[in-house]
Length: 111
Length: 116
Image (cartoon, rainbow over all chains, first blue to last red; front, side, top):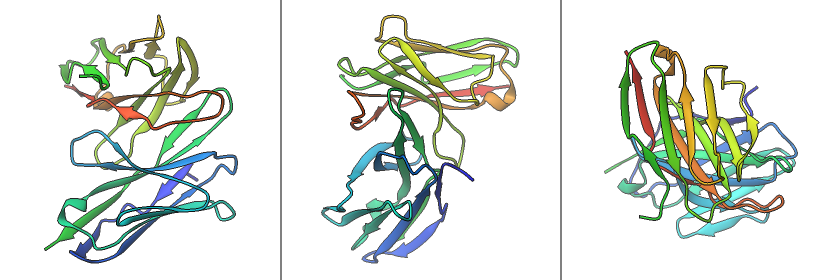
């Protein structure tokens, strides 16, 4: 089993749609969680951190379920510019910290 | 430019040659990571430094790969006797961390390696 798993997609949605991605992780000792966005042939960039209580940033909502070991990202009112690959990131370790990326979920938003 | 910078941006090399990549992290960041990314995959962890200490190496990092961060600032990743399977984007990232806290990692634009 991979340490961090995501549905690779692609998700093809029309503008204005709501879309959700899940990400599961295998290490119950995981300590912090992020969603990154990666545009084609560009480096990953932080989209948002994921907090235990859930958090929202505009049209984006992130949630963490420690019991089931998954995190989610919800995008509301999707825009053409949201088309990208969304990478789930999980950190664990003490002393030496390990940052593991999922393979990413591709999203295409169409007019 | 105060972001993470990587050099070179592109490298084409013949199989069997050695290559070395450089990463200059954000100056106040004590943590530095190397990742490898192939088409359609997320970044795969290779190795991680806290200051000058290399704290973890992935099993993906074979004996042909070596990374250093001699003064806790810039880092180099060397691949010896390159193979076609080494062709990938090599990404460097840095972050600031203390104790078990982890802040956002910032990535460089990567070095794209093509082994012919």
